[in-house]
Image (cartoon, rainbow, N blue to C red; front, top):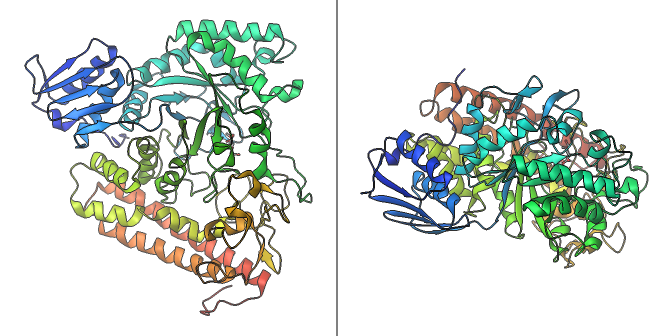
Length: 608
Ligand code: GCV
């Protein structure tokens, strides 16, 4: 079965153009290959010239020139021209823009080949070994470069036995993948297991202050960076959801991270150390423990203690990639620490690539408020459309491009231009109708007013209002007959709201409606800023959400003659499932809250 070319066919604008690539950097050869492939002519007497300075990803476009700050900028300039980009200066607002893969080498018995992957198997590994044909990886590197991505982590943050060995006797696989990514200016990073010295090195301990452990990591880093001269560094999930970490040895996360940082420092590598640390064995009866507090409680006191080449990687919200969360307070609480914000492109909690959910509007709110690095968990697999749902490609594209262009609608337009270059403007209109507000539609029929985790436990697809209510995972809504929501105020709750530098979330008077139940436990009759009550809002949004999905389906019917029939059929079948699922959400949520509250819908619509 053929693979859909995704958002970047050959750069048609180059056909017949006379081009000079005036640089001897290896990336100049990549640009030359693109010119040849698109039917351009390489000649010193050019009407389009690429030049590059020593460093930096930015570039300036004029009518006949791409003047790049550094070699990578030539590639970005080329792809900017491919989407008809504007003359002028183009600069990313995040220096490192990284895609994290949660790919496993072996198929994991519970999580499968790609943890939270909804697009088939890994594009890197199959049947426990690196794929023989890496043509698709090279195409993928090209797609990522066209989205402005410059770094990738190739394996899951949950590092099992097989992936741990990528550091040592399976390193050749990393070397091979790094070569493919390097071709498009993308630097390769590796997720590592903090206990590797024990698992792989036969040491009795992984204590970060033990000299043998430190030496073990230094030796590994030396040889790794010899094999991969531009190796990016390590990504670490430590003391989290069963992964090993420094707590085992009574050491802090700064001590753990700094030990790895010392090993990588001579080679210019960095450590991405995740702040996703919380107690996943909490007692649901204990109302004083609040998972939302955990990252800040663990990390804010360590501000200033991390080495210069440690980057603390923080999920954008305080819980876990829910449809609506406030910005993680960690992102503004560590001024003396390098930070990276982590987004989830794979739609674990946002429809699992069965539902259309264009996430760029959510990410824009996040990215407008933070600085540092940008990292995003990949949604790609060996599916012929790359992302299961063909329209989910736009999320991967946006995860990179938002760092260059902060307008989600403009980025969506770019994706359409590159993906459907021949398509008439009607298709663009249809896609905007379906995608522009799809995150808000998804929110309407799933997660009201900032309450999350009403999903089926384990796989996280579909509604189960009480699925997590009496579990150890720390994700509760506390609905009873009188009200719903989590009291996170300082006055009467867990005081999570006090982790912010402002007091906006402390009072229902100033808390925005969309986060009300994240911060407050209120009666169903509480009146929102919108003028509606909480219970009526729940009913209205769930009815509206389904109606909006029906409109998406109707819009897509209009596109039947505008796109490839197979692609049309794939999207149509996913939209059918989205409508079925949205209806299930609506009926379970409305029925649940009607039975709890006993308050009828003011419009008398059918609640079961
Ligand atoms: C890779 C959530 C997901 C896990 C994921 C974890 C993480 O809990 O459900 O699959 O593990 O986040 O980000 O580490």
